[in-house]
Length: 201
Image (tube, rainbow, N blue to C red):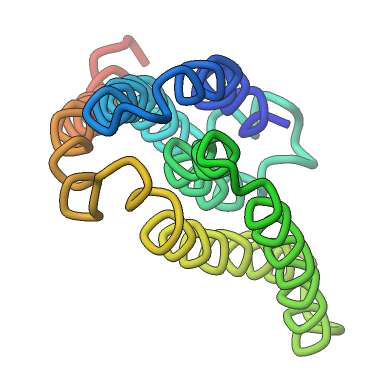
């Protein structure tokens, strides 16, 4: 729920306006490329710092929910990575719809759903009987790993070429937000160590 709320505030809010924007410019390659650049840059600028900081303070968040949630800190930190990849994968379907390929968009969603269930079942099978904390962390890691691979492949093969972008362009767009995220995480981690030392015992 925490990660889902972050996605709603970030990439999903931009996704709602992306389809009309892409559709209006579908016959103008340069215009649709510029729109894609702006939306992706804005999505990265919102979601990367947010999920990076959320991952950094995840132990504190889960501990604040109660003792029974305290072991969920690593799981939340891992799931925050899915939010990072969601910052651009959310635009795959609107781009394909604007390119008059809704059937391809539907097939991508179906394949992602089915393979996601299969990954879940495989991990559950191999970790049956293991401690709950290990199963939760493995499920979160499996979801993020497969979701990241699928999101990158779907974007690189089907979505980005239709707006005149490549994965290397995506890397250039993400660098400023990534730098800001790293600075924020470092400040957060250092603050968590320094502040307790400065407080009276």
